Image (cartoon, rainbow, N blue to C red; front, side, top):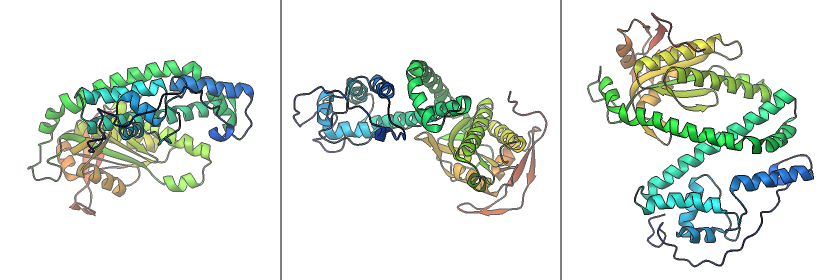
Length: 385
């Protein structure tokens, strides 16, 4: 899968040796970073879980895998790396039948001209990055549960999670499949069906010369940034810091979901979200500011929201609208929401919002801007159970 004519997804020009089937090596405590010695039960639990997760014994080298797929070694390596896995030594037998089946699915999408090579690699990368974050999140959540509910130490909790996983894998897998289909349906609506209506709605107050004019999606883009996070984190234990970050993420995620928005990403002390209308973005921003200010544990937050156009790629959003929202967040006072002039103009005639003009500011990359503080007017806004 490259521009080299001898290295494409259709053929493997290099002969391979006959395949040998070998059993995987038994993991050691050094492999898993465990500070305590393994018991026989623990070692067996690791081995059983290992084989269940990877779909059988490891018996294929990279060259043998490429032969099974009918592609070059470099092409097979591209797919493997795109899914987030490290390079494998040429003579190392690590691949299973499950690896062959999964990677063959990507290969067939290209062979059948459903996807071109670049898109196939991008899709594989999206799966790898999202599932990597997902499983780390799940394991750490299970470890935290064992530590808080059953008073295990960290190493003990991690061993207990290994013992627990076989009983929950199928259930989690079912929910992942369900969520994928539901999320795909939701994304289809907001990224295809309603795109044109959003662009039409975003024309108000614009003359077509704006920096974001060529971008394909109209979105309200917002940030919420915890105040004094760096100073607080220096005074907290690892567990207390983890609990604070988790509480912040859960609070933001719930409000954004209830408000009909989309949580794009969380980066430590900050969340980035978007919504399909300026009103939805404003409601989410106001609800985030209020909830974080009233939370007895979390610090208050600086919040912003900007209505404009963005580019959606790689599970993230890009463009001047995103950059301006980030700049406004840095300018806002704790517990307040700032918007730019265009967003203020769009919301000005809606009795649900109050807009208070702020002193002009010079913003890097944008020059002078006229921000406004956004406050709640009529109505209750987002209600979270």
